[in-house]
Image (cartoon, rainbow, N blue to C red; front, top):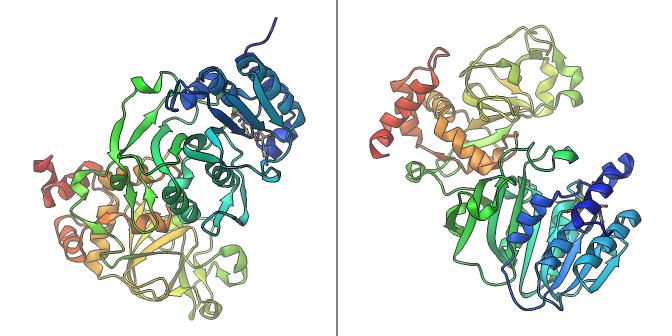
Length: 467
Ligand SMILES: C[S@@+](CC[C@H](N)C(=O)[O-])C[C@H]1O[C@@H](n2cnc3c(N)ncnc32)[C@H](O)[C@@H]1O
């Protein structure tokens, strides 16, 4: 009896060698996710030329071929010989014209002749590499974006590409070249972000937040279809979605892509960067500066702040913890000491379990101080020069960054638990004057409840009434 495409996938998944699975990132797509991905392609009666990059068991191209007209063809590229065999078996069930190439996708010269390109690529970080394109080249720092560039370049005019990839390309600095290139090169047609990390790829132990993205080789479509909280449990078309013009999803020069239109209550505000607030990352990398860390305060030393010093909306120093609370005077020679004054500190890392992604704390230091590299700090200077904030603005900013609406905004921008400076700079923010007024309404105090913070912010800007 011939095996089904799903059986071939399950058997291939069960017989993966653990070492090779890790090395080549063999996380095979389960059937419900494969069907959702393929379902994003526009139905057509005409035969199509299908390409599958890193085809694994061949599930993605086999399901695509199954749903395509007679006369369609498939090229599948897979570097693992066993999986290439599995691809061959799956594809033979779905299509008469099949070519499985058992090599790396980077060793194959692909013409721009495909109508349907589908992929669930490996996700690994790589050292920055420039992939040649018609416009010169695009810098990639990750295997999945390298696969995406290859996939998009293989599209014929009008061709469509559906990929199962992490959400990380949508924000942050690392992916900005790729984002700009992709958005210039093709139309962004659909995004479906899987809400829970556990639900899909159940047998594959995938920890990243994963999404489906559909792009096509044609001018940008009027509206992008966005499923902001998709599940593989039901067909996508039965799930809540929005049709949004691309412009409403893009932010700033770096073209950060949001998964939802911005809350209209935030639209009246400029970004933090436009308000003259700059987000920098703490300058002390402790393991490169072990020799200046100190458990005691020395006359020419400086206080050292870690995320351990963040206590609710306040920053406390010194605290009892296993990290040194001071640096010696030698730190003055290392370009890590920040000028005395008022700031707002923001964590760079959070955990999934924490209630907020963003943790902001007000800092007032009467002496020059040092911030650990795992903290961001907000000031009113530039990337080269740190200038402390007006004290009231620092307090108001801490309240603003502690509000629920801001946390919600951040979650729509980033799927990761990291809070990076590039994204924060694009955050809508009241002016310094408004922030100062906010600090008059509500003193920073750790006994203040979340509801109280939200109510004060809502009242100040008349949101509660407007919504
Ligand atoms: C995440 S798995 C997905 C497999 C399959 N597309 C699926 O959806 O089930 C990525 C696949 O790409 C293959 N792979 C990794 N690097 C590759 C490369 N440079 N060229 C071709 N295949 C590669 C791996 O062996 C693995 O089968």
